[in-house]
Picture 1 (cartoon, rainbow, N blue to C red):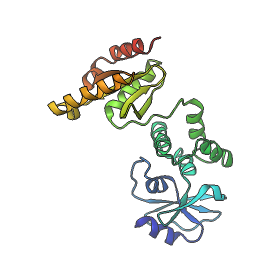
Picture 2 (picture 1 turned 90 degrees about the vertical axis):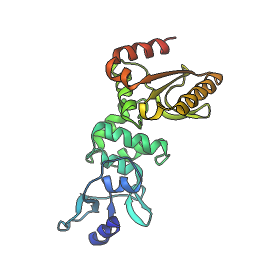
Picture 3 (picture 1 turned 60 degrees about the vertical axis):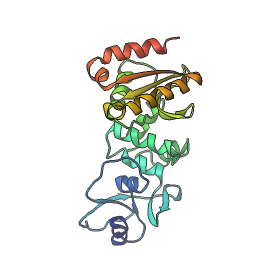
Picture 4 (picture 1 turned 135 degrees about the vertical axis):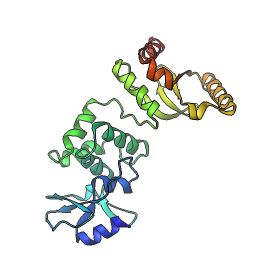
Length: 235
């Protein structure tokens, strides 16, 4: 395992961090060709295949051992990711960690309080200041619909959550509205068509309105999609 070898080569008090720690925590981040290691209070010469980050100190609350590896905690990992990911990439990583309950509700704020000037802290602080709930999407179509919702100034939905016995793409819980994105690859067969109708009927019986949008609608008539959603969300 390259992560274990990198730690062994880095000496005492070295920890996997940034994208390498995120990989161990199974967070959705882009792969990189090097192993990222944080060194506490010391420098060592660069090594092939290892990217070093020097930090003055790191308390026990920001350290973990997982899968036999020393690494930063999930909350500290997300803080560090703020320095190397795009804002949307950080949002997805935060959403994933919350969805899998890797990060307790107040732990991100606590990690920020422990390292308020650390690289990445400002990006994470900005995300937490402006979020309703970080949104995790699983397809390009869902990503596009989320962009349409935000551009139109509509209320933020929950994404990829379970309700009425099913996992749904988008949920406005207060309005009891479910929106599903139909991608051709997953909805082109007769069996999928029948399955979707059973699913919609079950959600309707549970008191939820279901609306479906297609990739063509999202790409060719986004204003119309926003208008329909706005009307569906109106009191």
